[in-house]
Image 1 (cartoon, rainbow, N blue to C red):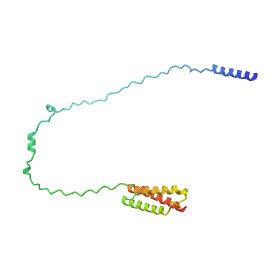
Image 2 (cartoon, rainbow, N blue to C red):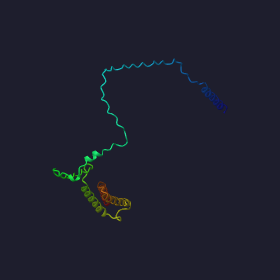
Image 3 (cartoon, rainbow, N blue to C red):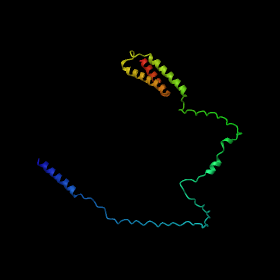
Image 4 (tube, helix red, strand yellow):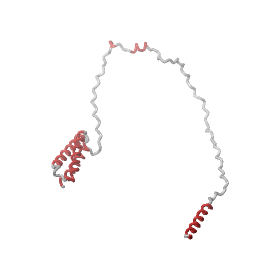
Length: 187
């Protein structure tokens, strides 16, 4: 036991002596750097040709500035034609311009026009209703009951999309309902 205590005391003394004797090395003294002054900036003036100044026309006499413009009643009276002395014109009446056709409606590439898209979406919804109608909630296994209910909800969403003229999404939803109903019927 005495040896253990003696060994610990020696190690403790060595460890504390090592920390106390360590000193950081100081950087050697070096002479400061001498930075040369920047060179003088020399700008040579560009040669200017000596031309005689151009004559400037004399300014018009200044008129007094007032907040109101001067009255011109005489000019107004002569400018108005007498309504009783209208002269019949010899010009032909202007021809009516045909109305311009509205520009074509922009839509993504490979997308049918709105009436064709509406027909396609309606056909897809009807087909999905028919396939889903062949199934009954009683014949679907309990494990697939949630999928069956989701298919009914998607069919409702497809019908609402048609009402909102969102034919592309309505068609996609109806196709999804149809494929889901076919999978449920096969099981």
